[in-house]
Amino acid sequence: MRVVIAMIKHETNTFSPVPTPLERFGDGGPYWGEAAYRQYKNTATPIGAYIELAEAAGADIAVPVGAEAWPSGPVAAEADQALNDAVADEVAKGCDMILLDLHGAMVTETSDDGEGTLVARLRQLAPDAIIAVALDSHGNLSDAIVDNADIVVGFKTYPHTDMYETGRQAGEIAFKALAGDCKPVTVWGNRPMLPHIMRQGTDEAPMRDLIDAARSEEQSGLLAASVFGGFPHADIHDAGLSVVTVADDDRGRAEAARDRILDLAWQRRADFVYRSVPARDAIARAKHLQEGPILLLDHCDNCGSGGAQDVMTVLGEMIDQDLDNAVAFAIHDPDAVAAMTAAGVGAEVTLPLGGKLDMPAIGLTGQPLTVSGRVRLISDGRYTIRGPMYTGVEVVMGRTVVLDTGKIQIVVIDRHHEPWDVGCLHALGIDLAEKRFIMLKSRVHWRAGFWPVVRHVVECAGPGVTTSDYDSLTFAKVRRPIYPLDDL
Ligand SMILES: [Zn+2]
Image 1 (cartoon, helix red, strand yellow):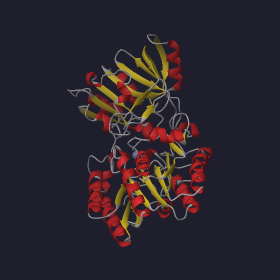
Image 2 (cartoon, helix red, strand yellow):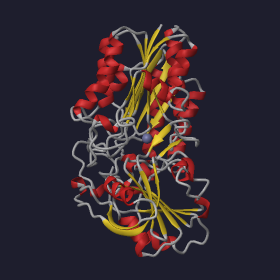
Image 3 (cartoon, protein in one colour):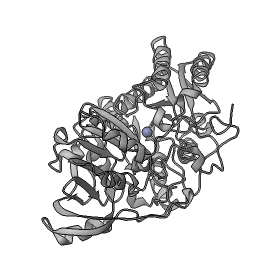
Image 4 (spheres, protein in one colour):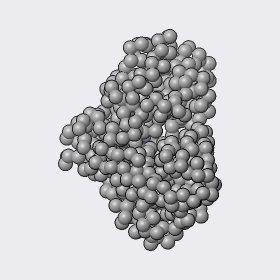
């Protein structure tokens, strides 16, 4: 039995000014072959689960590539081609099963449906192989993905703390199907709705209720039921909420379950609308809260959804409103990192921070903020995740500097990194429990590691390409009418 296992993941924000060359994947480039196997074996990821299952089954395993990049603009055509060719070349040698760890919202310079294009190509090369796909719950599903795969399963958690379980579920169905113990029939459907990302957290309604409905379908015998909140910042025809169900040799059952969950989602559409509070007002309110730590969430500039991570509005408000005993994670600014590294630990510096990228999609010109402080620490920015999301994976923040203004410790990095695990600050010797204010550039993933640490959460809207204000984005491709862009 020969099994090809691969990971290619990118959540594409078509409004993002950040480019996506091949070097953005992995650690300065994708992990190829043996390096991919070593990087992801024994990690709490779909690819980690696939490797474990295939080894337990005694399969002959090929892992051509493990490649994940921080969300950003459309993937460069050469990058997409190199990644897909690596998987296709391995599949062309012949295989019984293909286990894919994909995102579902990848747009490339040549295709609005990166995953669908890949899966269709692999299906042509291996018409009889079992193809299973694990997807992120922010995936925007398509006919090409579902028609060419035998099994599709998505995460049931956001923050994504069930990546391993999702891979395990998809892989187990695939091995059963190969053994002739089940005949998976997979169907999908959507409703014309674009849920806000800020309302997709699975620890609260309405998403929690939809996930409960999916779980209850699985408990009553479906092989898998997945709800995809979708990724509205990928402006493509099929963006938005969808549901995929997998039944054992029973299309009618799969379709009925799918429609029950979709109907529930449609009924709850108004609950998926999020309304922002401007940063100035939010921070003014935060100052009057008693107990810390108080989380200030800069959610419109989240690199984990394609943000530049260098918009200075929220940090600027923190300085203007004289917040003290605060930490900010993080500003992406390779030039500032280089200048502060050259100055050295202990140096007093004054420099233009952030604001390096223009964002034409939202009419924003980059505006650096002049900041003075002492270079407190310089780090290689590597740490291994111990928290519940991506457990066991070593992450690379790039060269990292802590700039201390006397009131705010500002973390400045030269690679994008959304803070979801407290390790990103612990690795820099920063004790969160002692801080009154913690500013994070994140939307929902921060909850994975920081929820137990903070006493209050204050969501602060500045400008940025991960804005939840749909009025500031020009949607050109998503199908219309769609709620809440149109009043349905
Ligand atoms: Zn996601």
